[in-house]
Image (cartoon, rainbow, N blue to C red; front, side):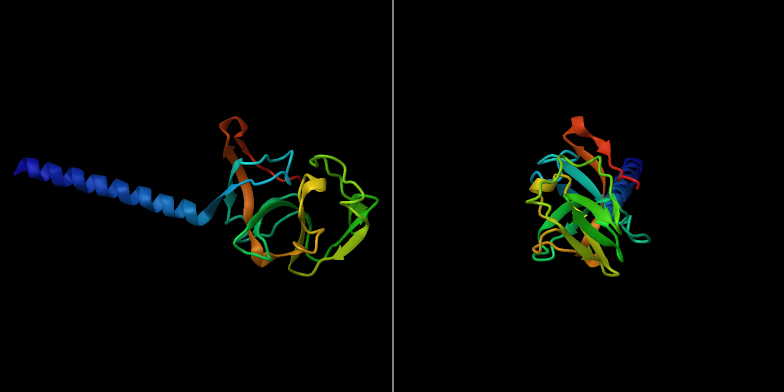
Length: 182
């Protein structure tokens, strides 16, 4: 009888461990999303095919801030996800003037961009953001579909999946991601 009792105890411990692993896995998947960078729109910050962890929880009690790098559902086809940097916040006026970005009339300093925006991709224009709208742009301004285009446009809060937290692949590029504090 004793060997059977030991087997039952070992089986119970194994099932307990399996249950804990399953619970932790489920919590991680509820709190985060894995994302694959596709395209060059966020160069030099991210390269094509890099793998990222996106937090769904960061905006449960707070809102996106300028400089945050977010993943959002493309409003025209919510099965597609995009990655961009938050530039304009609700209630602000975003203006592109002489290929530079201005927020409420003040030029935005952007050390993270790949190259200066050319006049073709950054024509003079302005946007007034509503109470629930964000203006997003790729860091590779001359090769990005973002809020400047009517196709993407301003992003409503409801489409935001979360904030990029971590680049984990390739391992040589492993890094925690922090937005720029303006």
